[in-house]
Image (cartoon, rainbow, N blue to C red; front, side):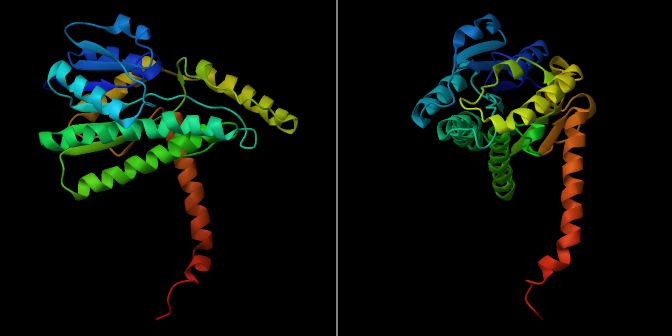
Amino acid sequence: MSQKVFYITGSSSGFGRFLTNELAKRGHKVIATARTISKINDLSNGDNIKVQQLDVTDSPDIIEKKVKEAINFFGRVDVLVNNAGYSQAGCFEELTDEEIRKQFDTNVFGPVKLTKAFLPYFRSTQTESVICAISSAVGITALPLISAYSSSKFALEGFFEGLDGEIRGSDLPIRVSIIEPGMFKTDFISNVQKAQTQIGQYDSLRQQSMTRMVETLSKAGDAAIGAKLIADALLKEGFAANKDIPLRLPIGTDSVETSVSKFKQTSDIFSEWRPFAAESDPKA
């Protein structure tokens, strides 16, 4: 495998940090970014890792300048990994418009702006590039108390699935992949933002959800191993050797099982209601 250059957002913690270190260890070059650069200065390595301050909620003009700067670090970028994000907790009714907008500004519009800034460059190179979006298993199945986070991942997946169709339909040498991790041991949970308002009638649900969360975390996967699998898929190594990275890539058995269960449930409902839906079809 020839040396690749990766651009990774949200490198200060979690999958972003693990993936940065994993790729550099394999001899590839990484431009690691974070909103607060002091949190990633320790990653800086003159040979393989460069760091850059990046706030994905900045204006398109600022982001375009950051992209041009990043390309000059190593002379090119081959893989974009949209990883920056956070989770806004709270029941649907409790969330303020501001809390929901902030969630979407970071988790949806951030990756959209950054990807749009990279696309002209990727199209111009006419070499194989990869655009990756780190989503979540809850981007397929929404859960109570994180409807804002789940819906931001639903929206992210919609944008990138549509982008994939546009790229394939235009025969561009660019691959798009949506990575859907299950539950992993990272500091992601400790960074969850709580809703400013809490309604008492949801307290029982809140307590039940917290109990399930603690149980789930006790069985959560190793994020370092998860990052290794993501690296394998992006580099076509290990199990992924000679395989094109798929549009949707689950990481963790819980992610697979969550999605398969959702797809089966939806398929069963659609099959049951198919005759009803068909009543609207034009008559021959």
